[in-house]
Length: 347
Image 1: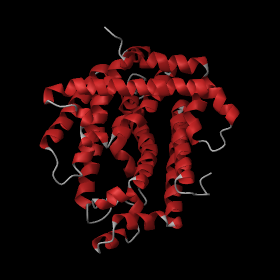
Image 2 (image 1 turned 135 degrees about the vertical axis):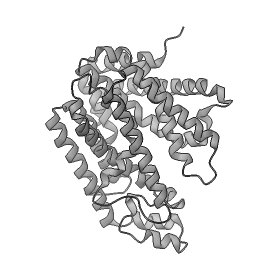
Image 3 (image 1 turned 180 degrees about the vertical axis):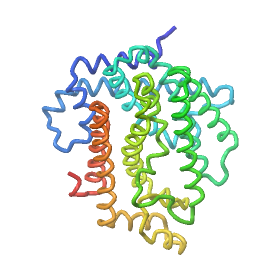
Image 4 (image 1 turned 60 degrees about the vertical axis):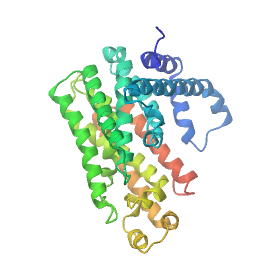
């Protein structure tokens, strides 16, 4: 039987990483660096290509895996518009799980690395289930079949990942907390639609609650590392830099969000709702918000503060490797504001 990409993913990541550690990090960070030189690009070109090839193979395996799973539903879940809209969730997840491999390697989690294929199968269920659910609850006439299948995928995800990490009080709490954060955020968001933004300007960390499932494997590793007492601290770290990623996505999706009456964090302290109720086009409201330099600077400042808070916490937790992910998030933030919003202050 042909070996699955899921089962060799960890070994291939580690092979690339251990051959040239610095080139690995350079390849990961290069897309976000404005001062990347031709020489530095050549230096890590091979590593970057190997990682890109691996992620592409993983994406093809993901599609095959989910297609096979959804055969009993009489369709290919990969073709559902609800999942196609969230394909970037998978693309964002692949480098995160490459980080996870390296993190586990540094933590000497040999047993978990040997089961990394099952871990990947679990998170593919989870990303698909949460992604579909996230999209269809935004639709007026959603498909009952897709709603039910989303819950089935989430159930598969939780069962598979607990079989991988073990069922314990600590792990059950983590999964329950992640699910509750997602659902509570969605309920609050939908309750506020057409009325107000569900967010509070002084509490941007809430923006990170919905994507926590992507980071479940890190959290489920804590018990085996005898760090269960640090669960709340790690949750806060992930919510902080996860919120930055969500805010970047909200900036990208501003017009689409406004078109369905969702007023994201970007709209706080604006007249967007008034303009929306007056019948102004979402495109024009979005342009006005994105043209507000003071607003963008405040958002950038809040995101930078969350990055700094996460870095300070990781210093206290003595987790330098995980700080690399936060650093990449910081680079992504700066690159987006610099390249997409022409912000000269994003340096």
